[in-house]
Length: 201
Image (cartoon, rainbow, N blue to C red; front, side, top):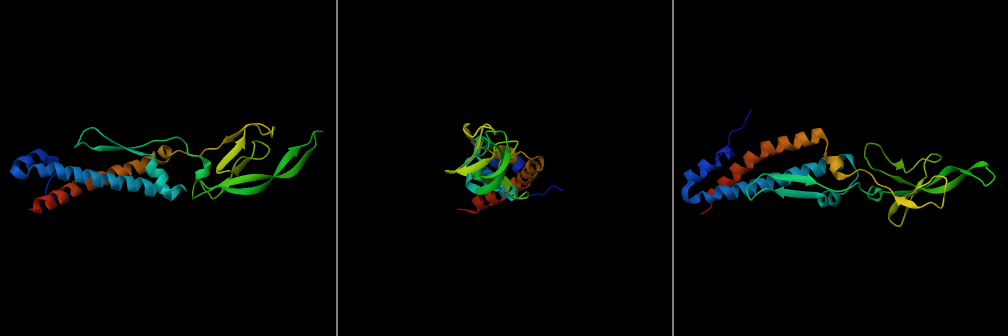
């Protein structure tokens, strides 16, 4: 059921005419209500993805861009950025057992430095790389690294990456929930803010 408010956001032109000298307050109320709805949507995205992924609020905020077509236009929240380094996902060093091959071709077990990360809160910590099939990862100098070749310990190490924030946000249910929240919240915010502005002398 559609809720009715004291001031209808769909009738802004009529409100400007009816309010006469105070008509300019309609535009101000619209700007305030957009700012409030925008903040609530951004907070919702941040809160929901941090329920699933072990990332910090600052990482989410850094990836957010807000696009405005014009002064009173609806805003678009756009999350940008590449895949995040695994070093952002609570890395820890760990000694692991791996299979190695001697110069003579004999396979034996040895210990090597490894690394674990926790990307998602519902999966626990995971070892970077798989011994025997992929070169194992390790954590050093603030980075999670893994060699290009599992068979060559002198091969170049590369930083390892996890998911991107745009990929986390782009969940259909989360997008639908955010849109529904804005549709519900914006008319209320507009009416409340215009009522407040009109009450001021």
